[in-house]
Image (cartoon, rainbow, N blue to C red; front, side, top):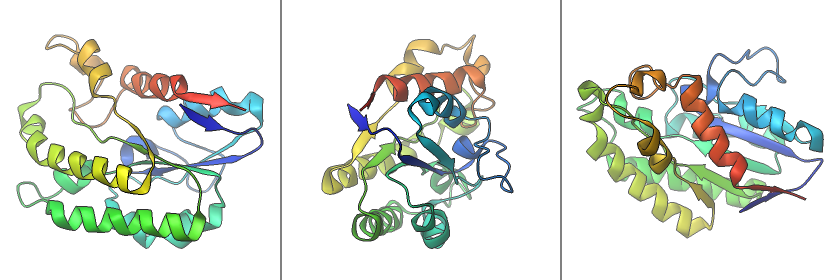
Length: 203
């Protein structure tokens, strides 16, 4: 379980799955992703939720934004959902797993050394039955395995949503949860937010 203290700040980082139309001119606006539901869940505990995810980002973009969108936020906890664009963009000439791992390792090193707060890694995913998307699963799974090893190395929390999606999705209904297999609809976001809420303890 992830213990979150009252009166703290949580930073969410990632790509479009987390960004989801947030107003970047308004720091209190968290967009329409799972972060919105988590913010509503945590509001009674005076926990500030900040979303600094940006659509299209890969791991190297998080490194580029580290000072402004990590350190300057002064978070007490950091949730990160990143990796699918490192597979999806330019596929089949996607980022190599070794480079992905090096960049992610550097990001976690910087957080560990310069911010020193608990980190929760959220597993990137491909869901559904769209062959144009599911053909990339092998590459993404390689990157997921690398994230899992990094989670062990840095002693982070780790949450996967694969089982929850598998329990809900079938060939007939998957388009109720996702646009194409990567971006989610409300029912897909609810799976993520519910899993996160179930794994949070407020103290």
